[in-house]
Length: 481
Ligand code: D5M
Ligand code: FE
Ligand code: ZN
Image 1: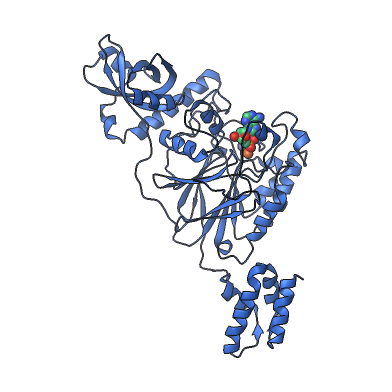
Image 2: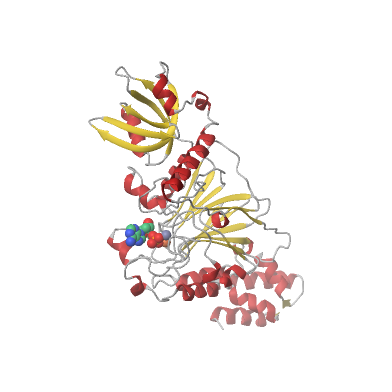
């Protein structure tokens, strides 16, 4: 027995009190630093009532941990690629993908007033209009030379080349990603070339945020990397046990979202086996089950895959296939979804995306870096696409429909992958990068990537207030945002 619990027991006995065995169990879980205060206050209160037994009910009332039966939690999967995979073949497939991307984003941008003057690229090239007109397309070439920037856009009617002279607009163009959708205001120049006067991204309109009526919380996790020797098993176990503790926030948690890289996988990078403690996917996923089984059953767990998890690597990824671990699929409190997915938690819409595209974006975009993944997340929202760049490191499948376009606007955008826990807000959308539970790996150290692992971020879905539990003793100032 902990010495603080012995103290509490003796203190009660000396005052003529008995502690019921069920109450005792609760005392054993209470933070030891708070125990003395709790027992003294309870005894003072019960002495007034002339009742000399401390029972379970007294403690639960005092600690505010009575399970509230009225706390309703409802989860719905609003979109999930798992059963929507219809990859095309070769060039035909990519044409279908890009034409779906163009059409979806054109529909989105059509809500903007400028879109009333939108013309096709072929029209603008043949009719050579005298006044400014708007065109839109996917960026295929972006070139800066001798103080001018050249852009080539493509739409289903053809391609279009425009020149930018304005300094500020050149900086905006510099940020554009290849294969990204953009609308441009253009005019005919003196030598009958086109001049780009403005560049407009689809972006997010002002809108009201959906909130939960109930005071329930969701936890945002990702990048556990279970099976890696750098997985922080002890710290993660402590966090999972905290979910059953009397802490008033823990008592209201009803959802845990896991945004990919739940396991470290096998054969993901060269010589990975030297950094694994579990050498097979099955073993890694068994360990996942063991840890997640410690989570109270009144909490729904959503599991989405990342680039380390088994199954297809190309985006969109279906859920971790049953064949690797049917145990997870069979759990009543586990929901398996693909990457990306949109879930509704008590009416709050959460867009979950592992975040593979961040690697390609930070490499090519001035002003964006691994230190501020939430800035990259804002840029994805502005462009209304989760992974615009095709043909770089992030594999993208030639789906007939581009499922990476952000059509439905979320209330919370949940991303992982870069192992940096960080929060921000954009147009009323709460941005959560859920960090990791894997210590810095030798690879990350070699490229100067500094993760902040061991932080659990949680959000009150009624108020959108954010909380965190830090299990990383090395981190003092962790959540800069
Ligand atoms: O990725 C964690 C982060 O580390 C992510 O930003 C990619 C980067 N990373 C990890 N391994 C590599 C290699 N081999 N090349 C380039 N970048 C890498 P995670 O998905 O957890 O491995
Ligand atoms: Fe990861
Ligand atoms: Zn990852």
